Image (cartoon, rainbow, N blue to C red; front, side, top):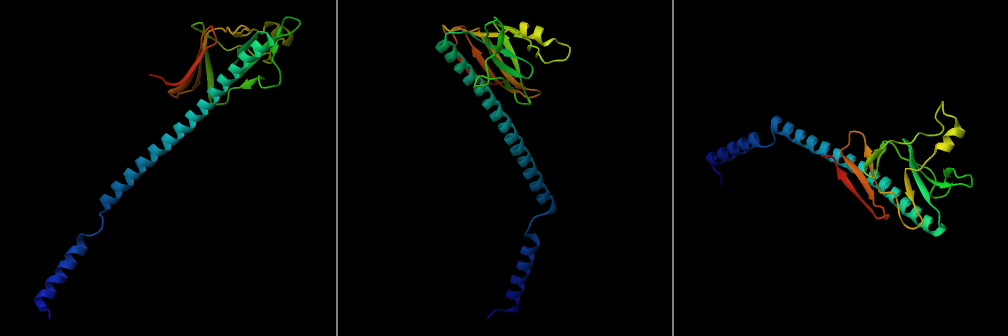
Length: 194
């Protein structure tokens, strides 16, 4: 049997342990702050990943369309032009009046650049400003049609205008870079501003 002395000692030990079990308010607050910081980084990472994925999709769509235009030019034996505006890009062919017109409603139709993206085009090492759309107010549509010129040429022999295209987002460090040389060889990659 237990003596009262032993029982008292066990009782005090239990009381003593009970006073020290659990977390202090400071420890709980520290854990909440850490979890909040981790959640913020996870959210930012997911947000950046979604933007990077959209940028990658938009950039690769352009690359595939450009390759298709090269094949079309070679198969049909006709030059195809490419023209960038501040809203998108279009493939052009020359009509029987020797004017550059939209290629048509097929795969090589006008393509808007999805928001929040914009493009920067460099042709043979020089920055080329976006072309002006014909439908802007104050511009005679007929005169504008006569002035439509491609910024990039794709020729039936496989040659192209050498260019570099950057697909960017305002205030975002990552961007999608496409480069093509005069023989139509393309390279593309995701880059980060320094």
